[in-house]
Image 1 (cartoon, rainbow, N blue to C red):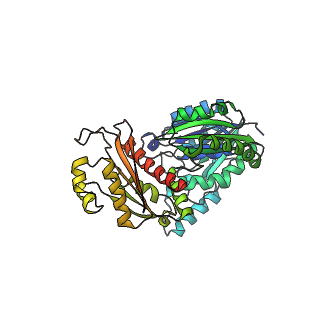
Image 2: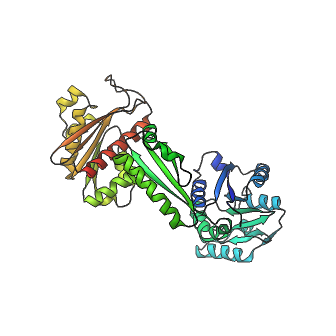
Image 3: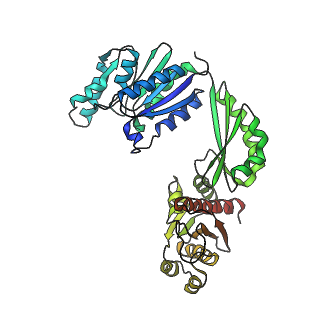
Length: 416
């Protein structure tokens, strides 16, 4: 067993370099390897070029015990990963009959004739460990030379992920006797520096460790522990997580959520409350984020994109006089939008957003990045003003939607 094996990832594919596809394989592999206590120290992406891939393998083999390559196992001439790795390790290839038969069955089930070039995928290096592919035609594999282990996995996530769990994980277990557990504490309504001040002493911990991260409008803390077992690592993390939640209070919207809308949907489901939205500058983004969450049909009533003043007036009942007097981007209009959405939908609560997303102003002289977010229930309504100070349209729309979601969260948590 290699103690604390060093691993690196190589993603193969010109389409990744060109930005034609998003490389989610590296993120997935890094997360899963960390859970196994295998440290990923390097990540690289290389195009479908034999010379450059060979050079990268030479560098990687000098610094890593395990090299995991994804992509380039297809049947076409530009799929070169396996061939380059065999040449690098001086391995001869042979026709793996079991893989070939499986490929033929794959095409037969779909009533298609197998192209001759697919036979290339059944050519495997002598002495390798074969990874079955039950979701495609390209088998994966592992091979070793001079203490360096190469693992080759197909690029499509629908093939890579099950193969990783079913074949790669059992192979990789020989390299680690530790388990690493990480938990993300998600916050909203506090900046990274302000958050850090409240828990500064915890950053000095060695095991578990606490590390801050920032994203648009949010900040999170990652608590990570290494132990001999998952149960032991969880026990190490729990008191640290509880201490952080105690210090930060209501700005913590949850642990291990991927986004604030997950927390909002869960809270609304617990309270059996339904919500409606009335959006102007966010163009339906709040509704989209809510309905991205599984189970949102239980809590989401409707979304109204009232981009024009006419729709604000005719559908939501916003006063034409107030639109003229105060402008569409105003506290008064945001309040009436929320109240109108509540009336139209029959929901328990409604949230509204009106603002100037940018990059240009609306001619009113109000600053880009200004918005008003309203929330109404059957008895009251509230409005908050937000100034991002930025002209980035995507950023402003995202942060406005996040603040609206947080307003729902705080209302439901505090029941007011």
